[in-house]
Length: 281
Image (tube, rainbow, N blue to C red):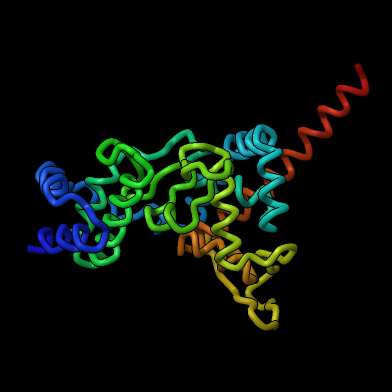
């Protein structure tokens, strides 16, 4: 019944072909693995595990290389939107390891499963399924074969379909947005953060020396990150919350921030070493 109503709305509101939708839905079935992944998400791991997984020497090295390889577009988007290039790179690094791992779950099947067999958030995922169907139709994308995350996010920056449609930016004018293209992915992440209210040249977070230290100012938050022994204490600012709009977990935002700083350092170090080699040759 719910499926019939969903199809009816797409036909009425979004001018889909009823026969084609019915044929497509006949191929879809619940995927229990998706439900299992949703009930034990990676972001629920403790900070020490999350940090050691994402803020690694390999990801830092690859991030510095990515910053160099896409330097022109990154600087262009950073200047246009006011978002640090290293933050854009870190988001892409955490999400897909710079485009190397785009996900293994068919997006259509994933969103269908979550939209019709996952009651806690079925309303949200049903909306995303509709957005995905509109996106693939309007951008002439292969609806059945695109793969993404277990939550239905897709492309290099892992946007949900609604974000793809509303925040996606094509670097080339009059071209469709292609989030499997690095230039469009970079532009779209920058645009997303801009629309979410990123404050240029303002702090993200600041590590406190102890739980007793605090910063009393408007808009400043405080987070505690438990470690295997002890804990880390941080003051957080508006831009930290902007990162959390991308993924609502504190450990995610902190991993992005720390990775961005490490990438900046590695990139600067690489440039110094290259300059030194040039001068000595």
